Length: 463
Image 1 (cartoon, rainbow, N blue to C red):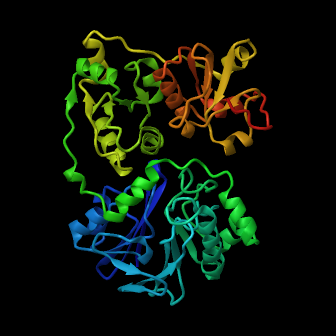
Image 2 (cartoon, rainbow, N blue to C red):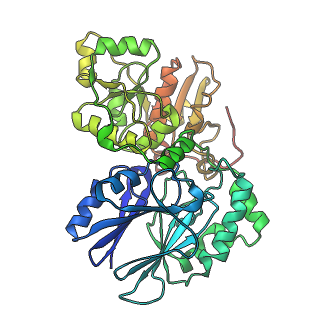
Image 3 (cartoon, one colour):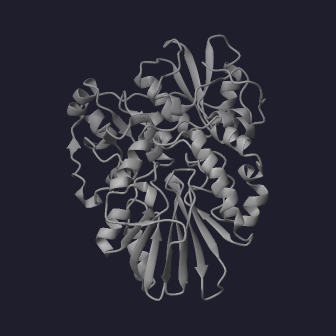
């Protein structure tokens, strides 16, 4: 049996291909599906089957395009209400391809339609070899229960408790666990960095599986959930109907600097995708800096929304193309174009670039003692609770779309996150909103700890 995991780091998303005797099955494909076609060709396989473990909310799936390009059949839990051609599956459904057998286990909880796929490699043993758990069971965590319009988080958490203990934990300890997401995904909150595990390991180490009381499990799973981006519900609906083929997206056109300036004056968003240090050195005033080096698409979806129609700013065509693809993966398909010739084109048109001041953690340690400085921590609450800078104020970046920190716009603000990626985004949003004295802390809290500067652990101080 052929088995392959495809891991997309920017979305912390794992998809899978299984194959035997010339046929292949793809599970939870990403939006751009050429990687599966290439892998299948390399291994002499034809993709005939596609499984979706649930209606994904954090990315747009490529199941419909992959089916259209291969003739494969799509399978999904019957409670999904999918409107494309598919096969509804439920407990006990089995599909055998050569010596590979998949058995469907209904595991509602993350979503009502969630399923897991028990994999048996009949060449080796008639016993289960692995389970593809979708967003039901992660490495070190379980799926969040607040993504359904038809069920309350408490109802879903109760269903998840039953799915875990009555179904998945009935599998032998040696069964391998392969989830649909890893550390960094917003579909959970405590995932470990490993990309696979075993049922036995999770039974012993996964905090959620240590909770024996259903009532306590529901309480813990529904308390202090990370903010749910608005685009999650929209992506789930896109996946319910199936997304358009990528080659159907409209062509992007270059926008001269003078035109972009008028567009921005009228409220258009400009999205600078260059690295943080390049953005800080010089950027189009009012542009939002979300670098391609991190979880670019997730933050763009969370902070801008799927209908934002941004103008891209980059220093190469390859970065424009990469940004276009990564935005499409979360459902941002309508773009207004890209800045012609990038930042140099802006200056050649006679316009000035803005700079984002930066400081080291040593500078911050000295300056924060002076009156008038505010230290703004834009990490998530769980990160803060693990340690923070004394007298800093917490305002997680995922709250910025809802409301910006309530500070005087003339106040000197030093912004930090874990490493500098999120703080650059936050600084750009503050500067765009008219905050006039914003400084980014290079290296963030990681650099603060590396410099052995004092770390506090106390209650959250909100702005």
